[in-house]
Amino acid sequence: MSASARRILKRRLARYRRDILLARQQLSAADNGEALHRLRIGLRQLRSLLRGLSTLPGAAPLLRLSAQLRQLACAGNDWRDREVRLALLQQAAGEADSKAFAAWRRREVMALQAGRLDLQQQAMVLDQLLPALRRACIPLLARRNRRLRCTLRRALLQTRRRYRRARRDWQQQPDDALLAHRLRLLAKRLRYQIEAGGKLLGRRWQRRARRARDWQQRLGDERDRQLLLQSIEHDRIPLPAAARRWLEQGASVHPAGLPPAAGSC
Image (cartoon, rainbow, N blue to C red; front, side):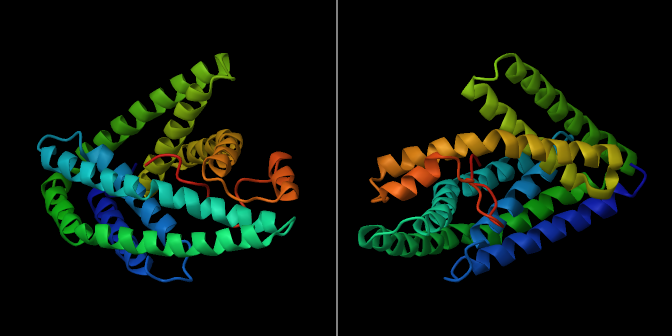
């Protein structure tokens, strides 16, 4: 951590703000199916960065604002899950299709577009929330570089300890779905905290981020497939038998080029 913490963190905050606002503007585009995903990623990146700063003295306003970011991210969970589900079911239609299944997919496309428009309206709060976050960060980022680096490192080590403990627990009980889910969430948190640190962290931490991403993906595939099949039953989707068999036989829950579903906010 030899780089200037103040300079890098200010640049990160500015970058995340731009990414979030751009994604929010693109939510209304009917042909932009990844805008919601990018918005959620931007919110998660920003929250990961704020998690480190929130341990500094005087960070109480930051904690309140960060909680609002979390609420906004959670509002998109179900819609993002449905986007991923539809992308996979579009692939399943290549195995077997029917008029009822095609009609359901058309209705789902329209519902998703309406959902993104609703989320775009909810996200208007970002016009006030992001400047407020910036103002709350200004006195925190005025701290000495060494203090900022130590604070971020301490928060990162705390997350890594929780992640390693969760991994040990899961390895002792690999059939426990709750332990697997907890490990996945902590792997995701560790990954985004490392990525938020950027050049403040060395290669060892970058390797840890890649390993955490691998664990996140590995644990998510089977769980997401089971949740997908459950949602098909719950929503009574008219899926042709051959398409269902294709899914049950192990089709990838994450089609090529498509990031995973929400999982959690």
